[in-house]
Image (cartoon, rainbow, N blue to C red; front, side):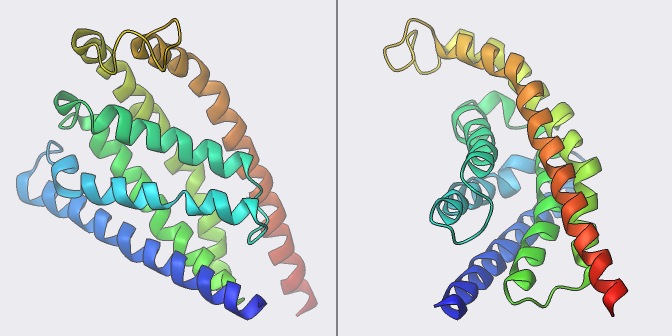
Amino acid sequence: MPQLSNFYLFLYNSLQSIGWALALFRVLSNFVATKSTDGAYASAGELICFLQSVAFLEVIHGAIGLVPSGVLIPLMQWGGRTHFLLAIVRGIDEVQELPSIFITFLAWSLSEVIRYPQYAMSSLRNCPDWITYLRYTAFIVLYPIGVGPGEMWLMYQALPYIKEKHLYGDSLFGLPFSYYNFVQAVLLCYPFLWLKLYLHMFKQRKSKLSKQHARKKKM
């Protein structure tokens, strides 16, 4: 059974690696060809929406104990990204060519072409130390870039369109506030939620790299 679960995790993470590598290639190819950031969503948006939707499996992996991540942190990460992509970016054509999309997609893709291969090789217990180091170091720069000038700035830019279009109606799921108010509240909460995730990743970094260092000393 452990061998079967490890093979499944290797397969899942390998497929995600390929998907995100393709997304990164499309974003960069479009940028080089057009000398513009405008086409990031047109070139890779649907693929990234699909990859991010499928990533809900990672919440399930944590819930059933397939990986030791638990449920809360993967759910927060998945929920934040998926809301940003499907509810805002995909729902508002006017924001799809903004530079914030290029920044977000580039930061996400660079992060994932490191993270998923590291997960895939770790599931086979055969991950080079340098990939593990890169996995738990690159986020220090990439994560703030993706969240600040990427996700948060785009959500702020989307607010006038949300209000103008009455996106998703004046009442969200029958509650006494609109989607416009909801996104405003999300923007206020985002820095605090982001900081929680960011600090969690630093704890992971310390744990993983200290184990790596201890293993090297034994050798």
